[in-house]
Amino acid sequence: MPDQEHSRPPTPELGVQLPAWQWPLDVGELRAWVQGAEELGFEWLGMPDHVFYAYDTPQRPPAVYPGGTIQHEALTVLAWIAGFTQRAALTTSVLVLPQRQAALVAKQAAEIDVLSGGRLRLGVGIGWQEAEFDGLGRTFDDRGARIESDIAVLRACWADEPISLETPNERIDQLSMLPKPTRRGGPPLLYGGVHPRGIDRAARLCDGWIAMTRFDPARASDTVGALHERLRVHGRDPATFPLQATIPLTDDDEALASTLHGYLDAGLHWLGLHLPGLHGPGGHGSERRLGVDAHLARLATVRRDIWPAVSA
Image (cartoon, rainbow, N blue to C red; front, side):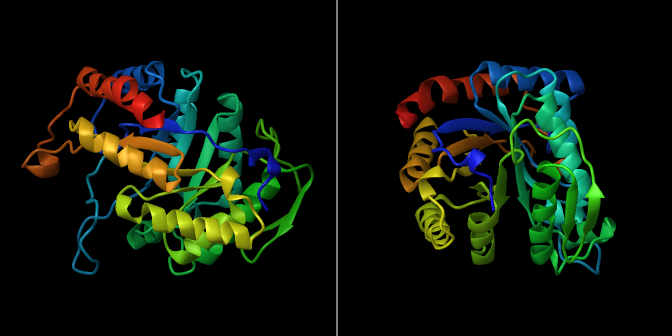
């Protein structure tokens, strides 16, 4: 079960996804963007995850995101920015847990939590790209069952010493993993997924929930209702369970305010902005660069002018 350390009523927050996906920033630009976003007052910084993207072949369906897409590694980037940020929470949204070795993720997450002073929020999900699982030597069809075993491993590794646990996939016998995360029970685990089994898994095993990037705002109320129902079934208080979603950053102030309002009214708490479309008509071969200063200026408008009215 989730640790009571995370069982406090969440307050509304506005975060932003890092431009470490589909954006060819150099290291200096990415650092300037991150520091600028934190200075603007965004409460959390999110990092999406993929190890591989799949090129189209005759043997697989067309890729949602094609091979050649830029994608920085989530945990490495969060460890890096932990060293030059001070306040913002650092979130994976979401890490594809079943394609990784769970004990190693526990170690990496604990390290980021320590290095950041307790600012990690570990979002996890089962993934969707079968070719990526193949490339990493992991089975795809049992990923739902395997993530439950993986979550148990994370919890055990973050708990008291010594560590002993046996699951269908792992056996840990009187081992040690130090340092522990800064918070008892480890960083909050947020589950990403909208399938009914995923909704139940979030309510039963995790400390919060994250919507997929392309989550339809019209589904928010029904999804929140389903989450609250499963939380009550499992004896948990919906009032202490944070719900997170992101929306595309656009130039339409009225539409942004309306969508943010709608999510808050539906019962979500941690809202965020993800990247606008960055590719011109030529696709991935002819990117339309949006400069760091221009992007931060747009974020400043949302954070200073739109969000205070919405969250009030």
